[in-house]
Length: 219
Image (tube, rainbow, N blue to C red):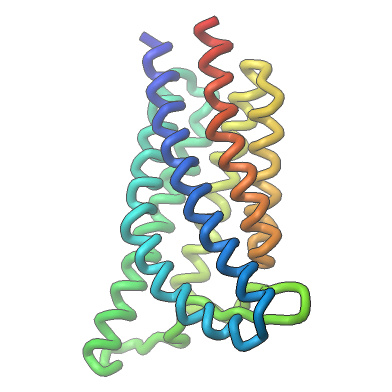
């Protein structure tokens, strides 16, 4: 039945959102703590987060991508109106595997004594610029990571637009607002304290608010 696709799709997406929210909250908290200490902490945090991103990419994000893909697949089965979200989830999946492949390349290259060709432009997967009030992502990223970032942003926005439409279709205003907050966070991710806070709040609220869609459908 169509309702089964809706329920299953929303359940998958909610699980993905819970994991995203927890992961981004941890990163944002670490960024905030480094801002409170000293400028040197920003550099130290860059190194720490390099290893944290390896863990967060390989373990939680494989679940995020899987749940996201399955969730929007089921929403599309429920209604073709949500097909754009499935396209977004495919783009996010491509971004994920590109990021994993490049991260794996960096690790192998380092273990091999940097003899692989072509050599990476920047060994650090992330560079941070620190000032008195903000920590900002540097745009000087290797091309594979830059493409992965752009794909991730594009896929995430398409997915959030679909969830906004879902909230609109079922007259759940809070779902629409949560999706908008997350979109703004994604677009401001270059300033990670602001973008990370908005994404954390938006995804956490969205995970709970999607339950209201099911209540509207079954009520």
